[in-house]
Length: 71
Figure 1 (cartoon, helix red, strand yellow):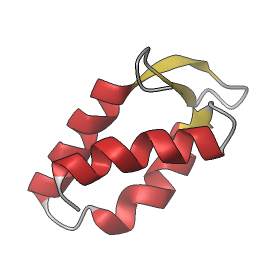
Figure 2 (tube, rainbow, N blue to C red):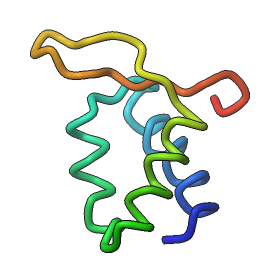
Figure 3 (spheres, helix red, strand yellow):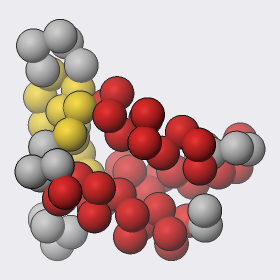
Figure 4 (cartoon, one colour):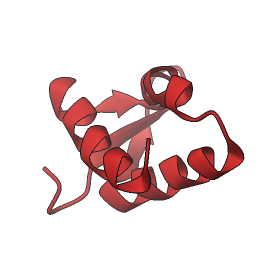
């Protein structure tokens, strides 16, 4: 995936899951698309650009929500 692909795919994924997604679900879904260090860095950058960690869930995992303008 290219950086722009992540910028499109991440909001779609979060929306499909009701607008709130645990970190583990995001990692599990996008991990196969991050085959190189560069792709991993691009994914992290895109995630932080389109979403923010809203709170910690019951298992102390982060919950991601879309930033304004991406929802």
